[in-house]
Image 1 (cartoon, rainbow, N blue to C red):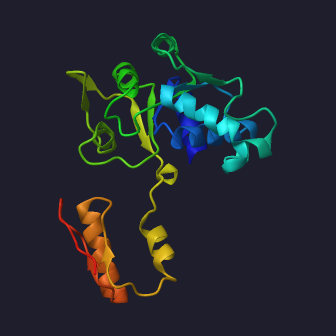
Image 2 (tube, rainbow, N blue to C red):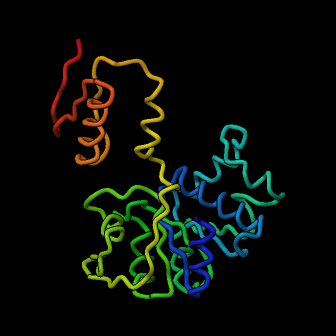
Length: 235
C-alpha cells in the first residue's frame, strides 16, 4: 500500500509530504521507504527529515541499534537505513527553509503528526495548493485537528490565520497507525479471563461506546466508558 501510494505520487511529479510523530513513527517511515527502495518497489528518492526532535531521535536509534527492531533495511541491503545518503536531516530553520525549493520527487517527513503545530504547517501552506503534491496520513487523526480535517476531505485548511486551499491529493494508510484496530483489539482480548470491569479511556466516544457494547453483549463483560474528568475509586 505504501509503495503504491509513493509510486502514484511520483507519477504526478510532486512532493510527498508526511506528517509524522517525531519519535518512532518518523524512523519507522524512513526504514519502510528504504526497504522499498532497496527492493526496487519504488525508485530511489531523497527523504527529508525536517524535525529537530526527529533528528535527535535518529541519533539515539543509531547509537542503540541493538535495542530496537527496526532492522528491515539492514536485512535487505547494506548501507540502507537512517544514515543513508538519501536521508537528509534539516535540524536548523535555514535548512528547513531550503526544502521549499525542492520540486520532487521527494519525501518530506515533518512533525507534528496531527498537524496541530510545528514545521509541518509551513510545508502544508506551501504544498497543499499544488495538485501535483501528495499528503500521506500514516497515523490516527483526532477530531478537531487539521489532520482530521484533511482526512475528512476539507477543501480549505486554516494555517497561520489564512485559509489554504487543499488541491494536493490526500491519502491515508491505516496500516502505519500505532493504534490497534477493532479486530486487533478483539484478538488481543480473546484469551483473557473475564475481568471485574473494563474501562474504555482512550479513543473517540462513539468507537469506545461501540466496543463496550460489543464486549458486554458477546462476552458478558461489565464495561464502562467514563465521562470527561470523571473519577472512579477502586476497592
